[in-house]
Image 1 (cartoon, one colour):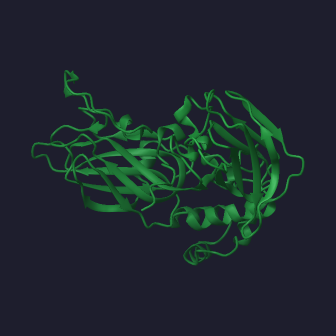
Image 2 (cartoon, rainbow, N blue to C red):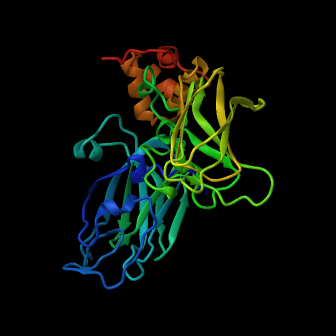
Image 3 (cartoon, rainbow, N blue to C red):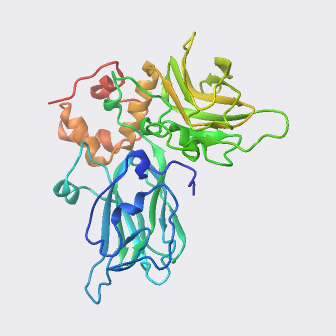
Length: 376
């Protein structure tokens, strides 16, 4: 179970807790805090001991279960879910179920209630004061999750680790940070992440403090540290923003950036260039070339607050992203998309059932173009 993948629900990536049936003892918003839960003994409110999590009241024989709905900050394909009951020892739920849904736009309570919810984690036992992690096997792209606890109790954090998969319709014709987690970028390999993981430098916004970026241990021998970032899809990087904000006595001395396509050799995008501490750097690339991955080398070690790779997707990249997205749509969403482009109902059903497709249906090929028109 790969918990190293980004937490798609995390607040720092834009996740939000939309609604819950109960939060008597502790607020539902605590579930998606990016930092680990903490416990401060003897911190009592008028409702009892304060917990860093979501906690419902005791049901006292009332049938049913408690639930909470979360909008993912980054839609994607979930690979594992962690129901963290840290510090909930005598008041954790006995069991939990997790469902997911895929909805366009910004649905309200009525739309969420009527959504097609698919089971991600079947009803499963939980242990108290434990990070209960469950593998998820769905191939579907999810935008919302619903955690149900049976019958009641407290959960400190909910983590939805998965592969980011953006909607290609939202990326065409706009300036694009190809490395951003919210656009489907992610770190796939790194030499070190002792103080903080490399995915941190792909988060939205500017870094807030040192541990909000990527920082390696002090290197005592030869060599240098590096991180490989998989881009949204094949693209032409043109500008690199590299921030060492907050890294004052521990910024890298210099950095270089390389790029490659699958099966290819690493080729230089940015030669080794000196960096300043606590500074935002911008570099315009002299020779943009199509790549799917970039490797950031820092010499010899240190911290990077944010890494931005700006540029357009190639035609191949746009088509590949649109195909991945189409194959990951829920059946209802795929049929609705095809119907909006004028296909008869039987054809919509047949094309949806035949997935995974190896190429986009003819009616959707505009999704792989420079521009497209949204069906009315």
